[in-house]
Image (cartoon, rainbow, N blue to C red; front, side):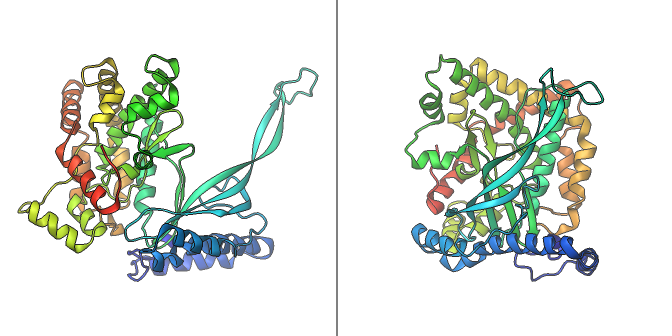
Length: 433
């Protein structure tokens, strides 16, 4: 409710629903008393305090990373962890400690997101299978609750609308459930994002993963080389399993990126996890926002003017493909364009597309709920029509399979995607292949 009171990141343009939402919040909070009210105050005070560090970093946007890091450490040192508070994106565990030196500024041209690490205590249920143990009413072993602690990283943002990320990840979670229900061995990781206020949010970090950008900065020349250094030669079982994981996740995310028209797919937004899966992050640009608008938001005027001169846009310049990102090093990791691995990728992408088509109405309805949110990626009912059209519902399954094969061919080595990566390298120093 707090996240939807305003239309803009800065919290200056009120939404028409603001009075209603404010009244609901006041009624809910006003009904709390005693321990419940104390817990509410502790929890909201805790994550407001942590999130506000991002806002305090804004004057340091043009400073060096060590200067930003010093400011984060200074603010983190002031935070006291109250009993029972939790990360908004992880309500299933309580925060018991903060690594106050873990704060790290993240790359952003105009915002000041940062990442921090928290010790979280959780519970898991253990089944006692000791034959001498007491049986429960169903004749099964008794259940025991066991506490354990994990270090959880989270990203905090101020001045950045996270509601589009929430929507994209909800739809991606629906995709995952559909694939599981029909027995498709595909992989998606819908990590958690929680919008906590206008332009504020908390984002879970994909565990045990590294971005393609970080690989480039570490002088990793290509994905195949990275996989070989991590899993062994191409003939090893570990490499073959990691390659299969990559293909299964590539197929799933390719369909998700196409249907949702997820843009801004530079190497900083593409992760590889410890098992070889590709995981996409940061869904701030999707549906009908065009790449030129992304550049206007992300790059300084003098640089976009150079692009205007090089790429005059009478009908609108396109920097990223309308399908999904599929570049040379991704295809090489699969084994090459004419390999069994690439053929499997094509098959799985088509199967994923065919699997979601029967659920098009449900998926479109989910998106339509956000149509009046004033988010920049929505351009009225035309957005919904174009979304529905991408499911190709007028085609039979054979025709739909051919249609998706055409989308794959359009994605392969698309020059617009290569150009967009080039712009990211010029502006943000993000390496690319």
